[in-house]
Image (cartoon, rainbow, N blue to C red; front, side, top):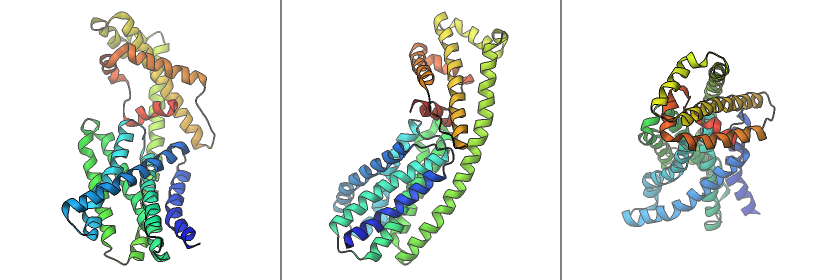
Length: 335
């Protein structure tokens, strides 16, 4: 009976916290499949951390307390952070809200594995310890990785050409937060209360700012995409700035490739508008999924990418909105 109570106290709080984040996402940017996937990836990170922590302790010849305070935070936040960076670079994260959910999901998965390990290895721990581990340590793991994800996503979005260096600020904040928590400068129960009191405030601010960012992006982006499609459909396209630019490309690319570039531009804008329309519907509580026509356009877009090639796509970049938000919306349709 004690095992069941300890397991519930150790595992449920972080899962409930993650569920609350998903519920508060009014645009439903992250599917439940991906939420469960991030938990699984976090569990793998937790599994990998065990031999690395043991090796570090043996190599450095340090006490367990020293390991948990000064070494483990670097190892564990690095493992969780690598997953976040991979998701960002593959355009799976579009806004701070989904960065927070993905990050917290990974941290939650890590904490779930860690607490399951302690349940098995130390079954005689008292209930108070599991309250601290469930409400404090587990939520701290999720919060630290969420902070890293939000900071890294924001910095990578602002400076996409220097992505690898921009992981450091968020990583250091996550490591310091993790290390400070493990020092237990205050009583463990006070530490736990600080964690569960401060993170909701932080996430509320992030969600409010992110929702405002989504609304602005939807408004400006939708109008800009519609304007280009209208221009392509009009009889004045050839004399427009984009038309003249594409005509100049005939000196560098073969005629059929330039035609494919125009098709790609139009298709990209149509899909971008479709993705933004889906988000608007979700915000109003409607379920809107891509149909067969959208999937056919995505397949055509994939074909055109191969036909145009990297150089052709680079030539089109001045007229394509290629921020991480805009790259993410195409992924959203394909998933």
